[in-house]
Length: 283
Image (cartoon, rainbow, N blue to C red; front, side, top):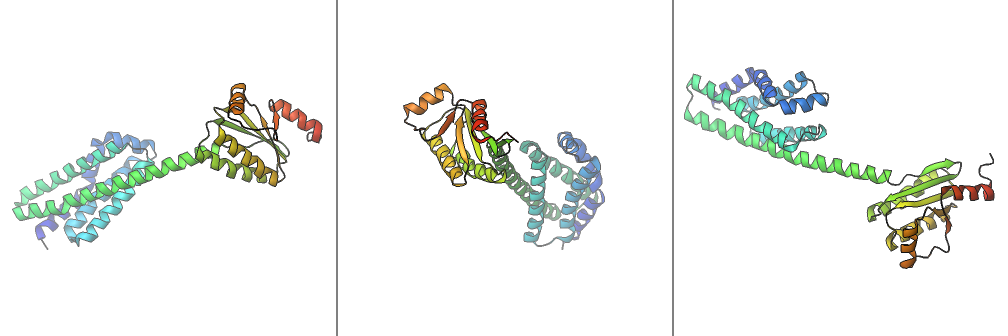
């Protein structure tokens, strides 16, 4: 075990908070992001000091290379998730590694010079520190990308769920406004969400409002018909409302047959018809 390297580790441990404070000041853009997300200055400095202590421990303990790489991989993965959760830009996060590298080596070079350490110690220190910092950066980058992709997927799923809003109107009656365009993902979710919500709300009638759909092609029509058929198996009557003239023309042109479906001009007409036929509003 190289005793000179242990001395460097001790020095790094002694001044870790000084280094952490300097880094915090130099990374004002990251500090602002952390503070806006509820990280106080003390918490941020403590986190930075712990990272510097990891280098100090490596220099003092000089453990097996595999164990050292594992420690820094774990730190990188944890930090990548934190950075992504704070909405810190990836380029800004990666810039911090250069600041860490510079700050740590400034202290070590000064200590090496004062103690007149051997050239062997210099190269051994480089061989220990730089690969570990590189490993931390790699793990951080991978975790950031993975966490970011997961967040995007969750946002997309939440948006899809919001795109199937079954809105109760009165007891047993709800309206489903279909807005925008319909793709395969949304079409699949439409069936699942509508049946679940219809059962939860104990519906007897569901009005599918097509006034907000940009286009109705054979795929969209087929999915709507499947939903209506599935609802009928649950004893729920469905009706189409709000078909715009241009959509109606398209539906006729491509041969979509709605003869077997109940179609009303708008929500008011559908509710009036339900009131007259089933006395749903009598209570």
